[in-house]
Image 1 (cartoon, rainbow, N blue to C red):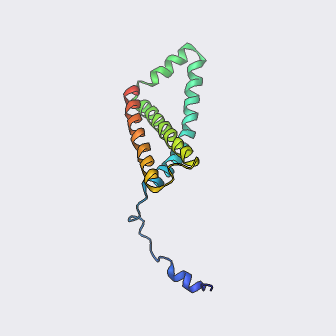
Image 2: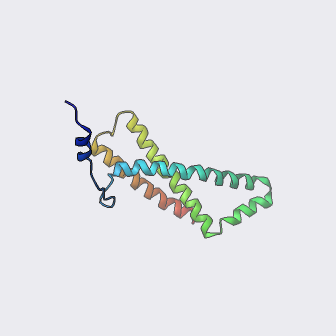
Image 3: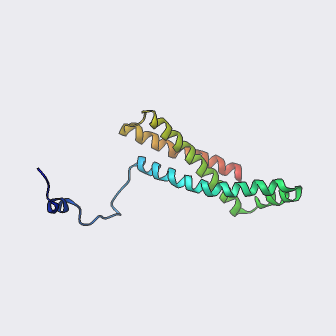
Length: 131
């Protein structure tokens, strides 16, 4: 028995209120893992530039070192370290899930929340180290 095109259209929602849609923790972890990957793509350019500048001469090393007296530079480095930690923990979670573990709803949600907790803990430690 085939559904007619009219019946299919009637079953679709007419209006989606995007403010009422709540993503589960597992979806948020997956989306933020992609976002942290994009952040790290740009961060690699910054880090390579800093490394290249610091290795050029003793004066340029001192110049790069003096950059870290600026709050904005410290904040950017803290953000890079936080994105790196998040991407690492989220990536490890995905690798474990690729082995067939943590795929049930309860364990998937627990591992997603663990990624958030570990990232916050690492972010605090990175902030203490940077500042």
